[in-house]
Length: 311
Image 1 (cartoon, rainbow, N blue to C red):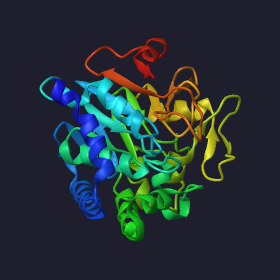
Image 2 (spheres, one colour):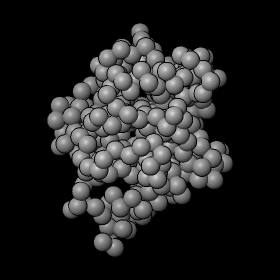
Image 3 (cartoon, rainbow, N blue to C red):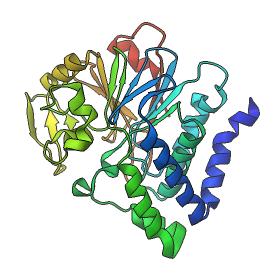
Image 4 (cartoon, rainbow, N blue to C red):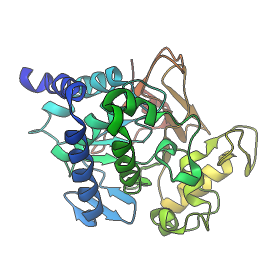
């Protein structure tokens, strides 16, 4: 067990020493993996950019990391993902926003991509707004700067390969009859599950992908209003209710917003926000991730908060 416990630290150490050629090979390998994922992959069912997870076993859900390698290592170690291989084989789901605004953005990308390469049937990489299409590019978008600091003159090669990777990341995850996972929030005009699964195909003709990546839940409003972010919208509890009914689930789990305590619960307990990095530039004192026993009876919103690990 001790050797597995050290694996997260080993991966982190590897990430600090990799060459540009090793990094490029890893990105291309995972791109090929994701491109070829379709239909049944282990216990997962994939349609378009939607992953459906059965309500069995365990799920570990990680929010925004933004280049915080230390928090990523902590989550891997305390969640026991890497030494649970012969037990319930938990699924590890990342909600997106791996890089930007953190000096270890290249290292975080390396570790999460390495995890996907090692455990292709158990690691799900979702798309955040910082991995969005070029017409929805986040600002500031400083990933290229962090890559240049690490790889020097050839950093543009890594950036271009990562941009290709972004197009293969997943838009949504549904845990059967229980949870929907999106990076930002509910797409207010989506009427079918396929509208979400194929949002990457209908963008920019529809706003589904933009809203999934950029929307934020809000109190005191009905419907949607313009977002101060410039992309996406703020959405009320009625939009949350509509999404949950359509997908036959109880709770939306998402990232996208910094939370001083690492997480926030809104819309009568139906929306949980996770933020899994700490410190500058967000200056939140805590990060958080969630660990769910999917085989157990679904928790009420009040009890579900007890499964959130704040650090």
